[in-house]
Length: 235
Image (cartoon, helix red, strand yellow):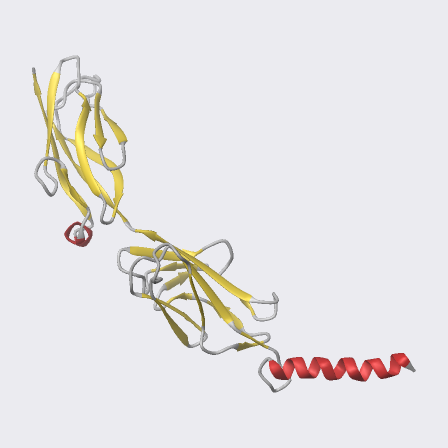
């Protein structure tokens, strides 16, 4: 007798739960979003015909936690992407990204089917965009030239161009330093001068004309700093 009374009570509880989740006898699920390291405006996430504008937190460094306005029903497919992004195998390119940053899914997939998990929790991580720091080395015939970027303490060894007999030609050499994040200063200097033969190399170009500057809006618009010039002469 106790068992027969328990079954109707259990069925009623299940129906009540389903109704509370959205009615119609079908469970519904909110789509929760957590965005980390968001520093600039412009991020808009989208899924199932809904858009969600995500703004930086009032306190820098905190996560932004939001929920899409409408819940989705059990069995519905969702995929949370930057609005307008190009989707290729669940990789999202472009779309409504924040200024100077790129945000991508973090830790867990941003897609699935409602009901696979007890909750839909999407996590995005935003990183500051980086830009190239490039230029040309002229007149290099010696070996051992090492350049450094003061903003990152990274170093780059540069070898001279060689002819078919492995002899230095002094021809131009393309210079590529490590990328620099937006709004970060850079300052390329000669850490070690070349020897054999001994040469003196000097860095020019960049925003301040001496190999330094800031990866600012102008540099971002240009796709990086491309006018570094290292000129080497024999001692």
